[in-house]
Length: 359
Image (tube, rainbow, N blue to C red; front, side, top):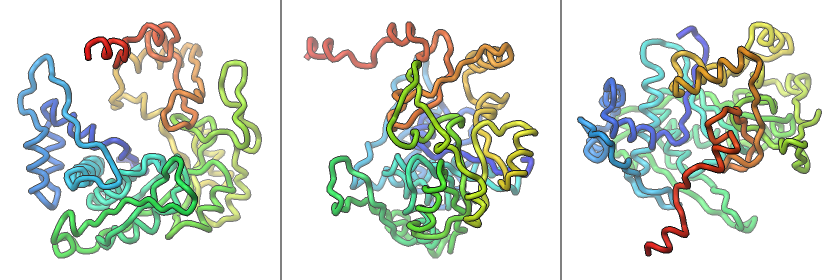
């Protein structure tokens, strides 16, 4: 609303959307966005399957769509497209400023459908990290023209010459889309990088245009790139980062594309430092996770903010907690799974020994 780029996450958003529908779509926001999707037949199928007008208490378990495979059913492609459309549509309501969507290269199977849904909602930027997204620029070029695309998927244990692919054809999933909508706006693409080497590799290997880079230092919230070289841990079990893990901004300027700095630049003073260093701006995430409008549970949020104010906060860079295999920032807070005792006393989701006794 203030003219800066707002970014939503497309990761797992299909599960979030149908969960909101099963909770009764409080405020009606999802259904309002769904009413603007250009093809209403798949919208009706989604509402028939997942919308619960008057949820009961206690709420039954959430329904879940099919799991992704190399040959996903059309209903899953439809759901993924539509959920990403909804997320971007809602973010763009009430203003004329730019909105971006963030996806993970590591989560590959939903990527093409997610991008297409965001394009249908006129997303302005695509931001992508957690890997080397060389295929994305070319896919964006084709999706803007509703052309069929494919995505080479990384398969553990595959040989170098193997070529496992997912395929996505907008015109097969939504017949008549070209005539109904016409060419879409191709959003700008900003890959997230942690080294100049990676920036140069993307410029050399990318299948289309890059519009700039987000440079995330190891101090950034959420996922971090692992340290360059062997993974060495300190006495507390955290990865040890060195000078090679911080980008030389002078070398970035030589590449000729704008870049934004992330990881501890969320004050007026550090913003000015970034601009003085040649950055186009900064990326801020954590501060918005703890703002008044954030969806984080209020008690957790207030407890963490109090710890920050009291200068009693500890944030670990944990090398094991994320299923992606990337280091991940974890706030240490008593009574949550970051607390060793709470973790040890947790109720497991599935007790294999008990299941064996039952079956």
